[in-house]
Amino acid sequence: MQTLNPHIGSLQLSSPVILAPMAGITSLPYRRIMKSFGAGLVFTEMVSSNGLIRDGKKTQLLLKSCKEEFPLGIQLFGDDPQVIAEASRMVSKLSPILDINMGCPVKKVVRSGAGSALLQSPQKISEILKTVRKIYPGLLTIKIRSGWDDNSINFLEIGHIAEAEGVDAITIHPRPRSQGFSGKARWQHIAQLKSSLNIPVFGSGDIVDPQDGLEMLNATNCDAIMIGRGAYGNPWLISQVLDLLAKKPISQPTLEDKLQIVLRHMQLHREQFGDKKTILEMRKHLCWYARGLEGASHYRVALQKTEQIDQVVDLTRAFFLQDQVA
View: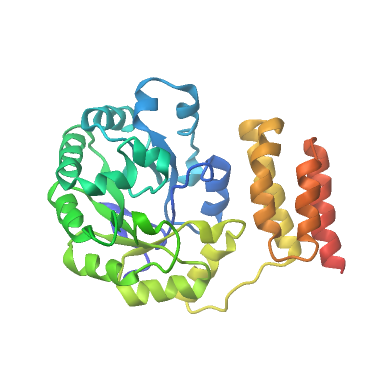
């Protein structure tokens, strides 16, 4: 198992648990919550390179940050080397780390030639990295999948290209694009990539409880783990992995602990986006926080009918506190 404080180039991370960039999820309020639980690195949502250079206001909002989440990684996606390079130049003073998404399986992204579509063209990946590296002076990482489908598993080829073009670290989600998020992640691909490269390798996929995180680190020898969907409504997953690594008993949140984090998450969202957007966007997070608790289905139904932020807060307090009394 690797060091508890991995490096990306000259940057030392505070822990080997990284928050994955997730579209529609990893906004600033979410990142601040996850950072407070010990994430050594957090990433923005995927940022469109095309949208950025066209000065889209929505795209610019994705880049808003604060000191407490340092170091922040910015993730770009696109398919045109010159466009990605220009977008890289534009964000070069905003973050010490730039990640290029080469693994997103979403159809809309793939149809544009970006995300995991790039895995079908190793030469284009080389061109993108070469072009970006000439312009972007900071730490450069990429996120990939194992390949496009089972007949084109090429993560080792992509890894060697990345290393040769000056990439400082690479994250692999060990499923081909064709697998989506179904079945099991092939952790052996993480181990193979780690043993083949001299740059840090981060593992992603199927980390849903703290033991999974520990097992991935031990089984693959990767430098850090990247947590995505497993942390939905469960930022404690990050601190629990760190408890295991430190050989401490796993800390379990009480319902009062959960309520306090839920309320803080909502407040941060209100400060960032205002009440209307908070009601719309926090519903999914609140449902995730409530998952597994008694009365969660009734709470979810009530949330969909609630149109005022104060009512959402009152409903949430009542749900968690009632459950606690019961």
